[in-house]
Amino acid sequence: MDKKSLQGPKEALQYLAEQQARTLAPSSSGIGVDIELLDDINIESDTFIERNFTEREQKYCWGRPNPHASFAGKWCAKEAVIKAVSSLNLNIPKVWNKGDAAPLIEIEIDIAQSGAPRVIFYGDAKAACDQAGVSTVKVSISHIDAFAIATAIAQ
Ligand SMILES: CC(C)(COP(=O)(O)OP(=O)(O)OC[C@H]1O[C@@H](n2cnc3c(N)ncnc32)[C@H](O)[C@@H]1OP(=O)(O)O)[C@@H](O)C(=O)NCCC(=O)NCCS
Image (tube, rainbow, N blue to C red; front, side, top):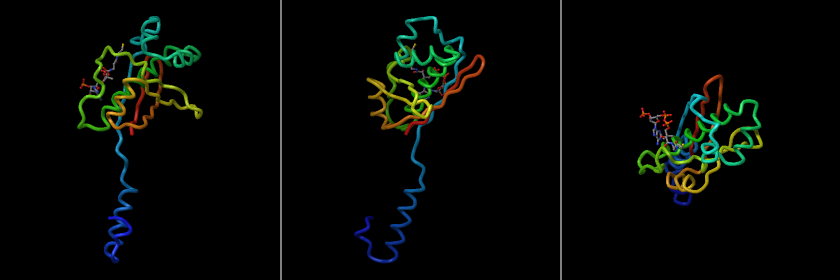
């Protein structure tokens, strides 16, 4: 119903109720989580680093107090992003279809002005987001001792 077709108080109340329902309804989201042992993230391997991390990510991680933890945190974020994108719409065909050996460099975890991570998609990762109807993904990363963890929300 639109405003123009309102004919009386009943229609007006129904219109207002619909508007309120739209405002209060939570927007649908996808969610993802990933946890890794730092020992499983081999930052000694140049091939692994170059396949999976952009130059900007590499520069950031090598500049952190614990580069191993920062690389592992970004890795977790990338995997959490994949899960979040895949879980937004459960009724579409698999959007991440390049297999477990696919490089993760097309999901960049940059740092925003606020200090929080910001997700940027390139190439096939961007296409997967378009296919899944994802316009934005937010992530949160943490690491302690031998572990790193990240969660992601896709909208
Ligand atoms: C989907 C993916 C991110 C899962 O990551 P993972 O570290 O293997 O899996 P985790 O142990 O963290 O989590 C496993 C759970 O994730 C869930 N899961 C698997 N695929 C998923 C998907 N596409 N979307 C959401 N959740 C998924 C399942 O519940 C699974 O549990 P189950 O095996 O008991 O059913 C991973 O398989 C993948 O495709 N990665 C992209 C490519 C890649 O990793 N390349 C490596 C380059 S060297």
